[in-house]
Amino acid sequence: MIQEFCPRQLDDVMRLWLEGNLQAHPFVPASYWRQNADAVRAAIPQARVWVWVEQDGVVGGFLGLQDGYIAGLFVERRLQGRGVGTRLLRHVQSLSDTLSLDVYAANRRAVEFYRAQGFAVSFSRIDPQIGRREYRMCWTAGQ
Image (cartoon, rainbow, N blue to C red; front, side):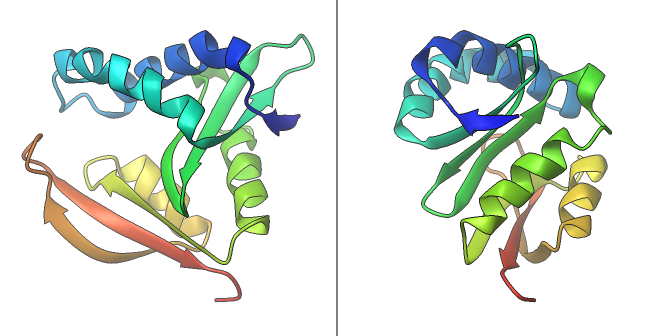
């Protein structure tokens, strides 16, 4: 079930954020994610965040949105491929006219997921902090 984030879910969301980044980005040093965790923890309550909550109350995924920009979409590994990410993304699409996000080109699984959901690459650049190519992907309702 999708619900809006509440502060008591912050530790679960942060766990998913760190585990998800470590899993999806083996080309980025783990220290990078750990060094940025405090900034992300502070930013999450400032964003609009929706969580996927399982029947037992466990947070199994989340999507964070800031002014039409998807700052993160993470799903517990055991739930990946079961439609949780698709449901979260479609929920946000139902509330939006346009969306954008950045994704590393090397994260092919994510790139293909977003393409399947109607996103297209609008430009690419080299991330100055990581030194890897990333895509800006955009989605517009009705296209």
